[in-house]
Length: 307
Image (cartoon, rainbow, N blue to C red; front, side, top):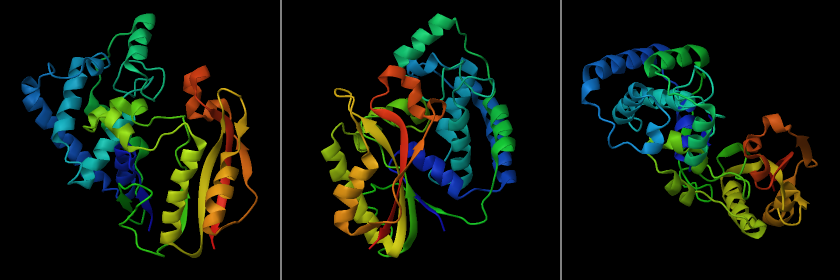
């Protein structure tokens, strides 16, 4: 049984959708039902209260559909509606006709001012897209249903109280990197759809420019991992090298985490920490160019065993 945990509401929604996938026919029927309901109520949907930053991205017709879905999907009560919400955030903005927005430079949410300038520079117009048609296309394209249903929690990784002691066989995770990505800020459009405030999300998520503070955070996370892991169970962490922007010095963060955090807690190193060189084309942080913080091309795989 797979268990997903993330404090980020966007990641939580996506994981929840994947861990409890409803029947395809149920999803299709629900989309059709919502489409008919929208057509009956379209004249009662007003956009005057919507954020200007949101209105500059979507055609009014498309935005009315998004507002309707935002107000009618019962994400907390229905796994079908959770799955549909995950489909929506997957197509909400991007660079092709398969997305609901005007043409965007990437699928991360760039800052509103950047988007506004991008629109002006490229003389973009907001395309009239049918959300329900694109949802059906997305469903046909990506639907998969695992044989086993999983569980999903929205808890701080330092205190995952819903997981019992000595109950987990394997942990695979990629901890947040220092000073690279603010997950709320760079997903503000998707979070809008989920009814979340991106600034509030970032307040809840760990973010620090300090390696000592990062080590303190990871020590607490590893303590909790040790609590839930069975004896001799493994934890696999994907941790990227980071660069100090002032000195240009590159730090092997995976090695630092092992030496300062994992080994003092009794974790054993299963194998040598090995690097994977990730090309710029495959790194999320490439979209910020010279402003990419301290991200590097190197990710390392840290494999630990509970001692």
